[in-house]
Image (cartoon, rainbow, N blue to C red; front, side, top):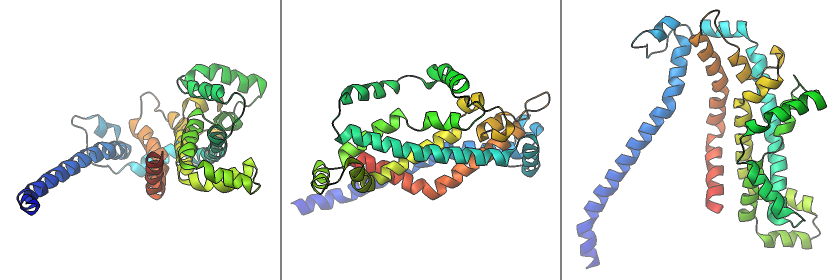
Length: 289
């Protein structure tokens, strides 16, 4: 009887699966189009003249002016210097975020200390407040207390640890690191930092790398705070440098989009190399967490 039912329902089930598969591919194609098209349009605008961009309908194919606009971008702002500055700041911030957030997450997940629950609630509470609320106070601290205006330390130091990173690492460590493994390490004479370095870090390394990538991308794309504390062209980050690209009397969209394309290109190259690891790290935390 079961073979008969399978014989009758088999082709229908196969057709249904094929229909679902086609629907999934169509949905993925639509999402891919809407994800890729803004990047394509960015290059189209960057490589055409303002007249081609402004006409109705606008040109939908890349033009011949990209290298001309790129030369104008380099003449207007120190683009290479801005890229190097941004990459260096983003790497330092990402490394600090990974180190301090994983260490704090280990403490909140596996150690007992006074005020643990209350301080964790405060950390989670800060995630609900917009960062712009504290920007005036932070600027006063950087300017009057530390005299770090136009100094990279004003960007790096406040970003060395984040509430989201601490909370996320706390959840990852609590779910992925068995208590029995930590107890065995303590029996062998391991101290807290040795346990963190030799036991915890190897287990959570994929998730920690994802946190580092998120921190790197967030720092690379940050504009508001660097635009307030950096006022020298030699110290501009890439987002601040792109913001300086303006025409004489009107907005030069081709010039701005060329600068924006150059600011986006390193991220695209980075995603080509680490995209698979990024997705696997996110899925690893989602499945085990």
